[in-house]
Image 1 (cartoon, rainbow, N blue to C red):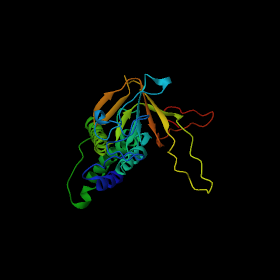
Image 2: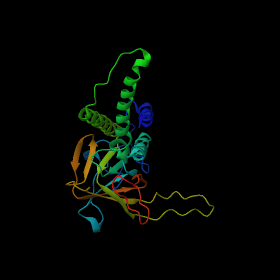
Image 3: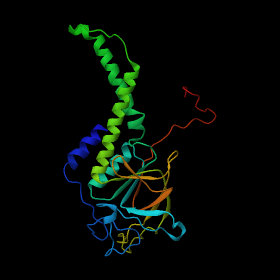
Image 4: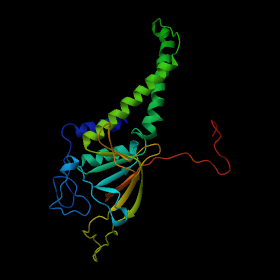
Length: 260
């Protein structure tokens, strides 16, 4: 987390890179699916934001947007990819079903654990203080305040990540996502073996509301959700899968509470 933030801050300090549609060079932002490049208007969706437009005949009630890159999963792998793609001038959507960004690492794994480890280091330092001529005693541990410290560290880092993504122009969606269709076939190589200059095949990513949520939410600004309904389709030429992982029990040996 720390290394990623340092790299992105060094490269991205100042003005957020402007977006340009890769196919038409449109400085106003990405062109909605099926729109005429010469008449596309994305001003209603904010600077460098794709506009919504009607979906296919089979999904008339589902709004659609288009992005150069859609990243599924907002853990360290996902948000690092989204930040780098935005730095290179691409329009990026980052999708995660969690209430906060950062995945297991920031919310439940690495960062909370390191907050507790920092506290234990302080205890060890006090106990060894006499070796350095320092008269200090440990009177006790307030576990309630220790828990509050851990939660504060997590809250600070997740909010900081959300602010950085918004500053880079990454649009965040809260919901469950999956790749459901291809809009075209992959380009075939030319007779001389060189790849043709055909457009990159489009893929549709369907986002549905997360468990416990009232609707799919879009975040253009950090901490400001925009409800979008039960589902939305994102069209893109590149999908990055970064959903993380989960432990898998051995056949015939299910997990038993605290014992694995």
